[in-house]
Amino acid sequence: VQLQASGGGLVQAGGSLRLSCAASGGTFRTGGTFRTYAASWFRQGPGKEREFVAVISRNGGNTLYADSVKGRFTISRDNTKEMIFLQMNSLKPEDTAVYYCAADFQRMPNTIPVGSEHDYWGQGTLVTVSS
Image (tube, rainbow, N blue to C red; front, side, top):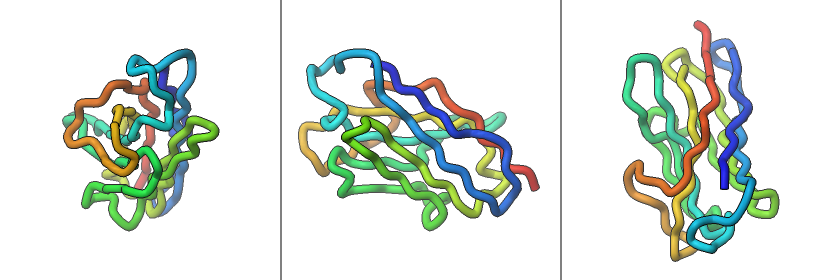
């Protein structure tokens, strides 16, 4: 299985972008489906370590955001299309980073992973916010 992130680009401060992440290409290692995986977005800015952005549970009923994006970003998912999304509004120059999607198997529908260890990672999409 591969995760393919897309939707990055150049935007002015205060603007919006919507990132997408699609799962494709085979069978998940656990034998489950996309619906059995919580999904997250991480980012890595220039000269910075990778950091958590947002996570959503298998059923979409539980979400968590980093303080730096709370109120501006919204994570969502469409299990029928095997996709997750990150709607980013009121973007700031400090949001400039490569954004990565990731998926982590969860036995329960409403739990979310703790930490950055995930079963699958996408290749990243670059978001650049100009001032």
